Length: 292
Ligand code: PXG
Image 1 (cartoon, helix red, strand yellow):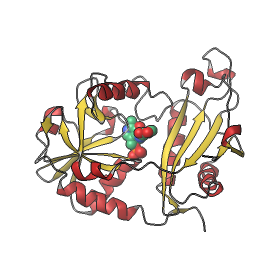
Image 2 (cartoon, protein in one colour):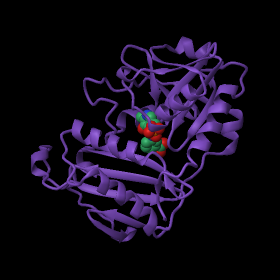
Image 3 (cartoon, rainbow, N blue to C red):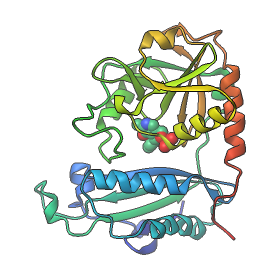
Image 4 (spheres, rainbow, N blue to C red):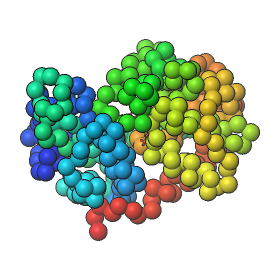
């Protein structure tokens, strides 16, 4: 594709964007990342993504050798160097090059990478017909270990869940927490609507605080909906009027079947449709502008 990649202070052709096999991001998944999107010449909720990245880094005791404003500028400049006005952006910070031991004190300089490429949109059919998902046996990480609020490079837990969904031919995997309450999917947050109330699992249950999740909560409240960040089970999803997923890549995707139970009337619902409309209006507001 011939992309220009930001790597440790330089913008280089992708062939030259290589890192050491001793990088602890590679050896141990020791690092953090963000998946960000640009729409219509503007990076969507850039500050929120950069803040979450720095919070993730802080939680794993990784000091980012750069101010947040500079990191935001790296994101914008990477889009400019690739002449992208709509983009999927991956910002990665690893512990850096160390030795074969896991002690991070041997890693003196974090590796910082920013990739901006064109986005693979989800098929339109998904938004019209909805998605079928299944609950998988692999549980979301216990927050006492690697807290799911950390967007770490260690996604094996979610990848195992994704494999379980793949084996069953489902598009996404519903993950429960250790207690059996609904947490989230492998790369998306989950919402349900029941009797006009919008509900999503509370953060302390062990899930990533999605930027799209927060945006959907904001838009729903703005539209006068009652919103609850709460605790619920698979049963509540089975009997919900609507269920949908949110994420940077997917935006908002309706779920019409869970574990072979048809959700609501089996079609994407009105709350989903309204929120997708207002979300797609929100992404058009110029914010972190790429080309002035
Ligand atoms: N939960 C998890 C576990 C995620 O990884 C979300 C929720 C949604 O968060 P945002 O901030 O995007 O609304 C994510 C993020 C992929 C992919 O290729 C998806 C994510 C991250 C990396 C890759 O599907 N989703």
